[in-house]
Amino acid sequence: MFKNLIVFRIAPEWTPPPLAALDAELAQAAFVPCGASQPQSMGWVPPRGQAHATYVESVEGGRHWLLRLMVERKMLPASVVKRRVEEMAAQIEQTAGRKPGKKERSELKDQATLELLPMAFTRQSALQFWLDLEQRLLCVDAGSAKAADEALSLLVRTLDGLALAPLHTALSPQQVMADWLVSGEPPVVFSVDRECELKSADEMKSVVRYARHPLDIEEVRAHIAQGKRPTRLALTWNGRVSFVLTEAGTVKKLDFLDGVFESQGAAQGEDEFDADAAITTGELGRLLPDLIDALGGEQLPGSAAADPAAPRSDSASTALPTLADDGPPF
Image 1 (tube, one colour):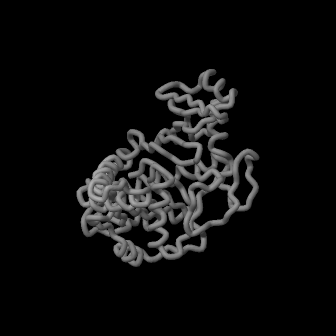
Image 2 (cartoon, one colour):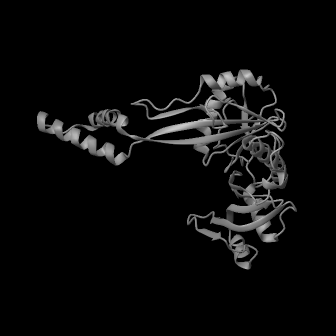
Image 3 (cartoon, rainbow, N blue to C red):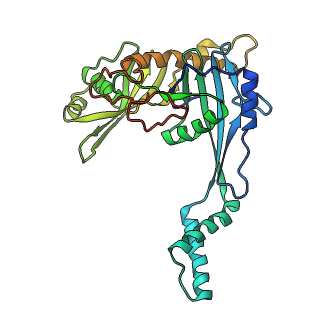
């Protein structure tokens, strides 16, 4: 269900609405495909993937909620727009005997875009949301901060009063990953896998990548001693879930290992979606607290960082999170 996790803290003052009310709110912002001249469309779809299903799925007696946002974009290559602008500019030069100026070419570009959009192909992508109401965490399955920002903007507009903030940890993920690689001793519930990326902080920005390669070697420790710092590190939690931790604290390439789903087969009368949702949220609901603890615990706004080198957050929770915050968002 999830491949990436960008994690946010839900502010304590927000009270979750009744499920029926939330479903009605999401239905009002349901996904509608792009119109002829519309470059992008975003809206909610049933997480179950079935027509007429609810727009929010309740898991484990309401302790977890799952939502799904569909995004459709018109694919209009810049080269195609440029070629059409050149054709229009040539027509003006031929008929009026002059070349279009800078302002007029900008207007031609807008005109060409509107003209071409109805003929453009569309691409759809979906973003999953997981609200852990018990731990008051919200996770977005997004591959980038920009994609998460766009999706969260719509979520905050839909859920009245929802306030979120990036979850900050006391220790910098980059420093913690470096310590694990040097010492070879991550916390007992984690193991270091065979993938990492190291980057220097100087103007050269040198990068060394290891893939399917042992990391408990002197060469890796030498790179770190020379000033390179991990930007990505592959880990496994409890032998059950593998993932890549980034320097920003985001989780990528989530993979549930063999046996996790099979060993907890669906309960009597429970369909595949319900079983998978319960197992996924259950496993991740235990993984995240262990990872937060491994990074020194959560750093609340205004508190001093445990790691002197780690940036700290200077702002309290806001209605719309900013992923480019100076602190290390988990």
